[in-house]
Length: 368
Image (cartoon, rainbow, N blue to C red; front, side):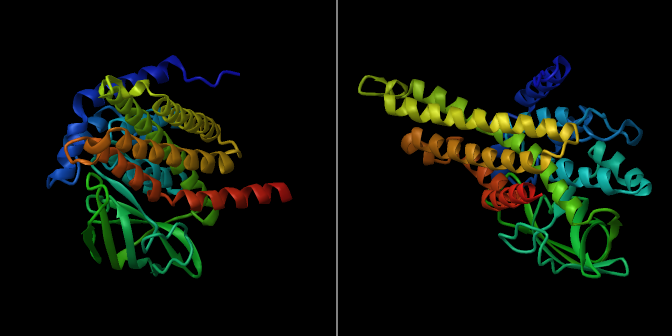
């Protein structure tokens, strides 16, 4: 059995890397972080022209219809470049939710706009910092009108539509909300990673279009899908951080030799490499389960999420330490990776949350 990616998929990945190296160097991320623009609009437009936002959208809705494996390759390269665009919430979650649960009218209305980048989607689940699951959701829908507050909402300051978790009749479901409609108030929040915006959104009688079939199990599966794709983004960023660190320690001298020559440094670099490769392996298996609609996704998704979070965060911490005093300065790029690692580790629920999910599912599987 061959678990490697095909030549066509590798070509797509290389094309994405070449494009991002030319159009999204780390200086682009820094420009967004330090400036007033919420995201790199030209990069977002260019990505849409290459079909990235519509990677899993069928051609009949204006998408490229590549598939989830191809989207995983694109996510990997988006992570490597720390691309400051609202890619994950729009593509991994909002688009996926409409594809999985949307009616024909909902798909026809929104998927073409999401595919060509004229619409940006987001996912509004949590209502307070640290909320990890669709439990104790206070936002409610009555007679098609949504009321409540969601925060933090990733890219909620720039999104055109939101897939919102809300309760109706005691049951939590997902609803499409046009964020440019009435009854909506948005407020930008300070973000640990200012290159990716966060917002508080207050809904006061906003029109909400229910996604039928998006029950508790459906929401859990949607989060599993997003976890897998986010894991690829994290592994790509971790690999880039390790490459930069390796280049730096080869050129930094102490006692007349590169610090990379010291055994203690070698051991720690080797440990990071192993963590990244383990995360990559877990992400590959989870991507296979996703692409084949295999039941193993229920455990493979959380495992990929956990290992990717740990690999990326640990690599960025060591990146700063190996750079020494300059690693803490604004001028070096270490903090760009550290910020993104912290943001991605909390965006879909913390690693602790996913560990608990994994334990619960393994116990349920053993008891079955």
